[in-house]
Length: 292
Picture 1 (cartoon, rainbow, N blue to C red):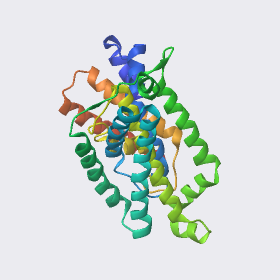
Picture 2: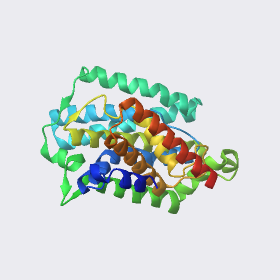
Picture 3: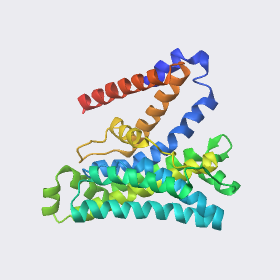
């Protein structure tokens, strides 16, 4: 419905132009990558507020490592950043018992601070065409590489959540942790793993940001945590655990991209865009919850 409204009202401003639609995909891909992992986190009854800051930190560590040792060293450093943050979040949440909301909220500040510190608040350039092509800047014909990343990870996420034992355990943990524990499921292990997966996905999104913009910056991913959670909820994933859908999450991410793009083409001021975007998301979530 949102797509149809924008198509009818903004057709003369190029909304349906293929280049504009491909730009929506490029701008949305990183949100979708993080939201796919967030689907697992929310389905398990937890939340991760640190994904945006982790994306920025991973973009900086990957860029610095590429400058020091090349593309493979950079990719390894970026993913290692995500794993380290995820392990930290997971241990604090499952072993010490700090709610994931507070753990990841604190990690948001820590990750951003570390990224600012090691980069000196300056952009770290990436002078590696191979990395830039593979992680965000390339295309195969008219198909952006970012679309392939989004669809590939979406297919894997959908299969894992719906067709594997781990996916069923994630849903069971979020649906009723006590019942899941009595059924023999190690709920602490499930929550630990989904938090690690979330941070790794955020690190990958940060590397995609860096590849597209050819630089690592601490600002990359700033504020994305709200869009990521909104994308998952818009797609039908429950904020209270027990149900999630990766396909719906990708649709939710694309919906946010459509909203952002449409409001810009309307010529609204940034303050007006924020108001309209919030109102549309509230309406969409309300309709989704009523349907459920």
